Image (cartoon, rainbow, N blue to C red; front, side):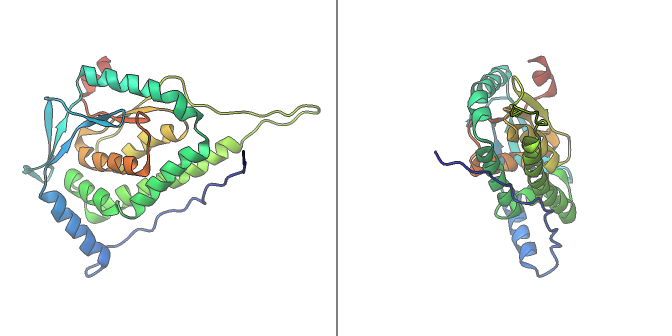
Length: 251
Protein backbone atom coordinates (compact mmCIF):
# COMPACT_ATOMS: atom_id res chain seq x y z
CA UNK A 1 0.00 0.00 0.00
CA UNK A 2 1.36 3.41 -0.97
CA UNK A 3 1.50 6.13 1.67
CA UNK A 4 2.03 9.87 1.72
CA UNK A 5 1.80 12.97 3.90
CA UNK A 6 -0.85 15.23 2.44
CA UNK A 7 -1.08 19.00 2.60
CA UNK A 8 -4.35 20.92 2.41
CA UNK A 9 -4.27 23.83 -0.09
CA UNK A 10 -3.39 27.14 1.58
CA UNK A 11 -6.45 28.92 2.96
CA UNK A 12 -7.35 32.08 1.06
CA UNK A 13 -10.26 34.51 1.13
CA UNK A 14 -12.49 34.39 -1.93
CA UNK A 15 -12.43 37.57 -4.04
CA UNK A 16 -15.68 39.56 -3.89
CA UNK A 17 -17.19 40.25 -7.29
CA UNK A 18 -18.77 43.68 -7.78
CA UNK A 19 -21.34 42.75 -10.45
CA UNK A 20 -20.79 46.02 -12.26
CA UNK A 21 -23.19 47.02 -15.06
CA UNK A 22 -22.23 45.24 -18.26
CA UNK A 23 -20.09 42.63 -16.48
CA UNK A 24 -20.45 38.92 -17.35
CA UNK A 25 -21.14 37.99 -13.71
CA UNK A 26 -24.01 40.51 -13.52
CA UNK A 27 -25.64 39.11 -16.66
CA UNK A 28 -25.21 35.54 -15.41
CA UNK A 29 -26.72 36.32 -12.00
CA UNK A 30 -29.70 38.16 -13.53
CA UNK A 31 -30.40 35.13 -15.70
CA UNK A 32 -30.40 32.85 -12.63
CA UNK A 33 -32.61 35.27 -10.69
CA UNK A 34 -35.13 35.13 -13.51
CA UNK A 35 -35.00 31.33 -13.60
CA UNK A 36 -35.55 30.93 -9.86
CA UNK A 37 -38.30 33.56 -9.89
CA UNK A 38 -40.28 31.52 -12.40
CA UNK A 39 -40.23 28.11 -10.72
CA UNK A 40 -41.69 26.72 -7.51
CA UNK A 41 -39.16 24.27 -6.10
CA UNK A 42 -40.32 21.18 -4.23
CA UNK A 43 -38.06 20.83 -1.19
CA UNK A 44 -38.22 17.47 0.60
CA UNK A 45 -36.20 16.31 3.54
CA UNK A 46 -33.18 14.23 2.53
CA UNK A 47 -32.66 11.15 4.68
CA UNK A 48 -29.88 8.69 3.88
CA UNK A 49 -29.36 10.51 0.59
CA UNK A 50 -32.95 10.04 -0.59
CA UNK A 51 -35.81 12.59 -0.76
CA UNK A 52 -38.48 12.24 1.92
CA UNK A 53 -41.83 13.93 1.24
CA UNK A 54 -44.62 14.51 3.75
CA UNK A 55 -48.15 15.92 3.60
CA UNK A 56 -47.20 18.68 6.05
CA UNK A 57 -46.26 21.50 3.67
CA UNK A 58 -44.90 24.98 4.19
CA UNK A 59 -44.36 27.64 1.54
CA UNK A 60 -41.26 29.75 0.98
CA UNK A 61 -42.23 33.23 -0.19
CA UNK A 62 -40.15 36.26 -1.07
CA UNK A 63 -39.91 38.42 2.09
CA UNK A 64 -40.27 41.48 -0.16
CA UNK A 65 -43.21 40.00 -2.13
CA UNK A 66 -45.35 37.71 0.02
CA UNK A 67 -47.56 36.71 -2.91
CA UNK A 68 -44.60 35.22 -4.77
CA UNK A 69 -44.06 31.57 -3.82
CA UNK A 70 -40.54 30.25 -4.39
CA UNK A 71 -40.78 26.75 -2.92
CA UNK A 72 -43.00 24.18 -1.26
CA UNK A 73 -41.30 22.46 1.66
CA UNK A 74 -42.10 19.06 3.17
CA UNK A 75 -41.70 19.37 6.94
CA UNK A 76 -40.38 16.14 8.44
CA UNK A 77 -42.75 14.20 10.68
CA UNK A 78 -41.83 12.11 13.73
CA UNK A 79 -41.19 9.06 11.55
CA UNK A 80 -38.85 11.04 9.31
CA UNK A 81 -36.91 12.39 12.28
CA UNK A 82 -36.50 8.87 13.66
CA UNK A 83 -35.30 7.66 10.25
CA UNK A 84 -32.77 10.50 10.12
CA UNK A 85 -31.42 9.53 13.53
CA UNK A 86 -31.09 5.90 12.43
CA UNK A 87 -29.38 6.96 9.21
CA UNK A 88 -26.90 9.20 11.04
CA UNK A 89 -25.96 6.46 13.48
CA UNK A 90 -25.64 3.85 10.72
CA UNK A 91 -23.33 6.05 8.63
CA UNK A 92 -21.18 7.11 11.58
CA UNK A 93 -18.52 4.39 11.75
CA UNK A 94 -17.71 4.23 8.05
CA UNK A 95 -17.53 8.01 7.74
CA UNK A 96 -15.37 8.42 10.84
CA UNK A 97 -12.99 5.71 9.63
CA UNK A 98 -12.65 7.23 6.18
CA UNK A 99 -9.11 8.65 5.71
CA UNK A 100 -9.20 12.33 6.59
CA UNK A 101 -7.87 13.38 3.20
CA UNK A 102 -10.81 11.67 1.49
CA UNK A 103 -13.28 13.54 3.70
CA UNK A 104 -11.39 16.74 3.00
CA UNK A 105 -11.51 16.21 -0.76
CA UNK A 106 -15.33 16.17 -0.72
CA UNK A 107 -15.52 19.54 1.01
CA UNK A 108 -12.70 20.93 -1.11
CA UNK A 109 -14.79 20.09 -4.17
CA UNK A 110 -17.84 21.71 -2.55
CA UNK A 111 -15.80 24.86 -1.94
CA UNK A 112 -14.81 25.03 -5.59
CA UNK A 113 -18.40 24.45 -6.69
CA UNK A 114 -19.52 27.37 -4.49
CA UNK A 115 -16.87 29.61 -6.02
CA UNK A 116 -17.71 28.55 -9.57
CA UNK A 117 -20.68 26.75 -11.13
CA UNK A 118 -22.97 27.01 -8.09
CA UNK A 119 -22.18 30.64 -7.26
CA UNK A 120 -25.16 32.11 -9.09
CA UNK A 121 -27.58 29.55 -7.65
CA UNK A 122 -26.46 30.24 -4.09
CA UNK A 123 -26.48 34.02 -4.54
CA UNK A 124 -29.81 34.16 -6.36
CA UNK A 125 -31.58 31.95 -3.81
CA UNK A 126 -30.16 34.10 -1.00
CA UNK A 127 -31.38 37.28 -2.69
CA UNK A 128 -34.86 35.96 -3.41
CA UNK A 129 -35.43 33.89 -0.28
CA UNK A 130 -33.76 36.18 2.28
CA UNK A 131 -34.22 39.62 0.67
CA UNK A 132 -30.51 40.30 0.48
CA UNK A 133 -28.94 42.67 -2.00
CA UNK A 134 -26.51 41.42 -4.60
CA UNK A 135 -23.55 42.52 -2.47
CA UNK A 136 -25.00 41.04 0.72
CA UNK A 137 -25.61 37.71 -1.01
CA UNK A 138 -22.15 37.68 -2.57
CA UNK A 139 -20.32 38.17 0.73
CA UNK A 140 -22.55 35.59 2.43
CA UNK A 141 -23.44 32.76 0.06
CA UNK A 142 -20.36 32.83 -2.17
CA UNK A 143 -17.45 34.34 -0.27
CA UNK A 144 -18.06 33.66 3.42
CA UNK A 145 -19.37 30.19 2.63
CA UNK A 146 -16.32 29.20 0.60
CA UNK A 147 -14.02 30.88 3.14
CA UNK A 148 -15.50 28.68 5.88
CA UNK A 149 -14.58 25.63 3.83
CA UNK A 150 -11.10 26.93 3.06
CA UNK A 151 -10.20 27.79 6.64
CA UNK A 152 -11.94 24.77 8.17
CA UNK A 153 -9.88 22.50 5.95
CA UNK A 154 -6.72 24.29 7.04
CA UNK A 155 -7.75 24.08 10.71
CA UNK A 156 -8.48 20.37 10.27
CA UNK A 157 -4.89 19.75 9.24
CA UNK A 158 -3.55 21.92 12.08
CA UNK A 159 -5.55 19.88 14.61
CA UNK A 160 -4.38 16.54 13.23
CA UNK A 161 -0.76 17.72 13.16
CA UNK A 162 -0.86 18.57 16.88
CA UNK A 163 0.89 15.70 18.68
CA UNK A 164 2.12 15.13 22.25
CA UNK A 165 5.73 15.75 23.26
CA UNK A 166 8.12 12.87 22.91
CA UNK A 167 9.78 11.05 25.80
CA UNK A 168 12.99 8.99 25.69
CA UNK A 169 12.42 5.41 24.62
CA UNK A 170 8.83 5.95 23.46
CA UNK A 171 6.94 7.34 20.50
CA UNK A 172 3.97 9.30 21.80
CA UNK A 173 1.30 9.83 19.22
CA UNK A 174 -2.36 10.70 19.20
CA UNK A 175 -5.24 9.79 16.93
CA UNK A 176 -8.39 11.86 16.62
CA UNK A 177 -11.93 10.57 16.17
CA UNK A 178 -15.41 12.01 15.85
CA UNK A 179 -17.87 12.44 18.69
CA UNK A 180 -20.14 9.66 19.92
CA UNK A 181 -23.62 9.70 18.43
CA UNK A 182 -24.45 12.45 15.94
CA UNK A 183 -24.48 16.24 15.81
CA UNK A 184 -27.74 18.20 15.57
CA UNK A 185 -27.08 21.41 13.63
CA UNK A 186 -29.79 24.09 13.94
CA UNK A 187 -28.87 26.96 11.66
CA UNK A 188 -29.75 30.63 12.28
CA UNK A 189 -32.42 32.61 10.51
CA UNK A 190 -30.84 34.63 7.73
CA UNK A 191 -27.36 33.41 6.82
CA UNK A 192 -26.59 30.95 4.07
CA UNK A 193 -22.96 30.57 5.09
CA UNK A 194 -23.66 29.93 8.77
CA UNK A 195 -26.06 27.11 7.98
CA UNK A 196 -23.42 25.62 5.72
CA UNK A 197 -20.73 25.92 8.36
CA UNK A 198 -22.79 24.53 11.24
CA UNK A 199 -23.65 21.43 9.25
CA UNK A 200 -20.33 20.84 7.50
CA UNK A 201 -17.67 21.65 10.11
CA UNK A 202 -18.65 18.69 12.34
CA UNK A 203 -18.98 16.41 9.30
CA UNK A 204 -15.50 17.35 8.09
CA UNK A 205 -14.09 16.05 11.39
CA UNK A 206 -15.76 12.64 11.10
CA UNK A 207 -19.16 13.27 12.64
CA UNK A 208 -22.55 12.59 11.11
CA UNK A 209 -25.04 15.43 11.24
CA UNK A 210 -28.78 16.02 11.28
CA UNK A 211 -29.21 19.50 9.84
CA UNK A 212 -32.36 21.49 10.58
CA UNK A 213 -32.15 24.36 8.09
CA UNK A 214 -33.61 27.73 9.01
CA UNK A 215 -37.15 28.05 7.70
CA UNK A 216 -36.35 31.66 6.72
CA UNK A 217 -33.31 30.59 4.67
CA UNK A 218 -34.78 27.38 3.30
CA UNK A 219 -34.27 27.98 -0.42
CA UNK A 220 -30.56 28.79 -0.23
CA UNK A 221 -29.99 25.98 2.29
CA UNK A 222 -31.66 23.54 -0.10
CA UNK A 223 -29.51 24.60 -3.04
CA UNK A 224 -26.44 24.33 -0.83
CA UNK A 225 -27.38 20.78 0.16
CA UNK A 226 -27.87 19.85 -3.50
CA UNK A 227 -24.36 21.17 -4.10
CA UNK A 228 -22.99 18.91 -1.35
CA UNK A 229 -24.56 15.89 -3.04
CA UNK A 230 -22.92 16.89 -6.32
CA UNK A 231 -19.60 17.15 -4.47
CA UNK A 232 -19.92 13.49 -3.46
CA UNK A 233 -21.20 13.63 0.12
CA UNK A 234 -22.10 10.03 1.07
CA UNK A 235 -25.66 9.14 2.17
CA UNK A 236 -26.38 9.63 5.86
CA UNK A 237 -23.42 11.89 6.61
CA UNK A 238 -25.58 15.03 6.63
CA UNK A 239 -29.32 14.44 6.74
CA UNK A 240 -31.24 17.52 5.57
CA UNK A 241 -34.30 17.82 7.79
CA UNK A 242 -36.72 20.74 7.43
CA UNK A 243 -38.97 20.50 10.48
CA UNK A 244 -40.63 22.51 13.20
CA UNK A 245 -38.53 23.32 16.23
CA UNK A 246 -41.01 21.59 18.51
CA UNK A 247 -40.83 18.33 16.52
CA UNK A 248 -37.03 18.32 16.58
CA UNK A 249 -36.93 19.14 20.30
CA UNK A 250 -39.43 16.43 21.16
CA UNK A 251 -37.34 13.68 19.59
